[in-house]
Image (tube, rainbow, N blue to C red):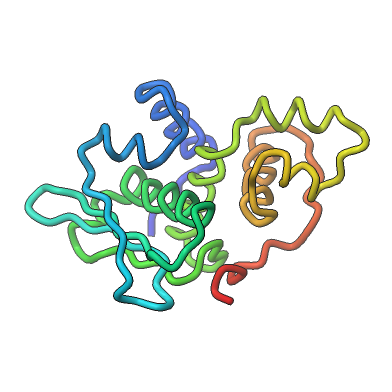
Length: 174
């Protein structure tokens, strides 16, 4: 299993944002000619991506909320950018977001957090002393778990932010 440094993952997200002019994973995948679809075939599978005949496909569960679909799309894009060689071997399937035990899943979660949440927006928000952790999440339209990954990324890149909670790896599995 390849270990990717957090700074590498962050740099890859910054390159994508600059190249495509957006943080929206659906727009980025569209511009990359990745085929994205929804499926109602699986009740527990949140999303998966695979490569066939040099075309990359991403399937996202139609049972998810729009917010969850955005996170799953960013997560699957993380797999495409960070783990492309593995896509050729077998589909990358995700039934639990925020998995803390599998290295590739963990890396895709960090990628999703760095893609969807802007460092500067967090910096601006934390200046507001009246805003608690969940208020920060709400203001930035981020789940507490995704925000925890973002704060971890910021901390690993040398910025001091308090990690307010334990990251639950199976919160979307409920």
